[in-house]
Amino acid sequence: MNSRGAYKNEAKELAISYRKRGFTYTEIAKICAVSPSTVHAWLAHEPFSQAVTVNNKKRAAKENKARIGLVNKARRSERATQYEAMIKLAETEYRHYRTSPLFMAGLMLYVSEGDNEHSRLIRMANSRPELHRIFLRFAHEFLGVEKKHIHFWLLLYPDLNEVACMKHWIKAAGVSASQFYKNQVIKGRSKRLTLHFGVGNTIIGSTLLKKKLIRWIELAKKELVK
Image (cartoon, rainbow, N blue to C red; front, side, top):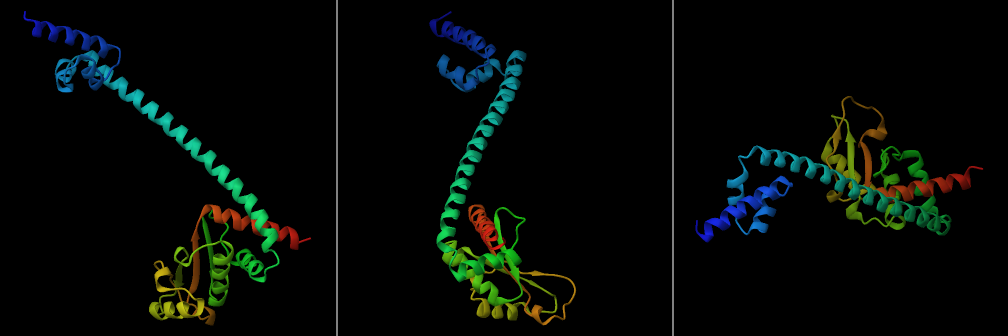
């Protein structure tokens, strides 16, 4: 047997040894200085090697799950730190903002018309455009939200003209056409004058800002309701 053949046999025996210890084909190829396809040809049809493949996949899945768990834990810890910092900032800001009529108006609007069910969403729904105009000013001046990040949609009855309603809200509430999400149409018909242009919904998506807003409301209630 020539030296090349001897090396090949030695490499194959070494490959078998490493494979039985759980090494992957790629790892064995690097150790034995051969191609991964050669290692595959040597070992793929061996029952013990097939069992190693199954075990490696199980181990990889377990390690990946553990890694994802660590990442999620780190993210939760980071979010918790952000939430805590936001609450402290809200308390400081409240002391400076509490004398502003617009600030208190925005808080009270949200108390009466706002959504408290969704932790990641600030949503105010009302059929009166002027109230949305006030809340939009509040959101810009105190929450620091740019107009392009504030979205709007209408809840309409089927007998209402969608385009006409949108034009009405654009003019009366001070929103732009680019801020509109897809409007929703509900069954039935309302004879109430206040619903002749539908119900407006102002939307801001932010968990941090929602926590700030809720904390402001808690502080305002504590101060006003004695």
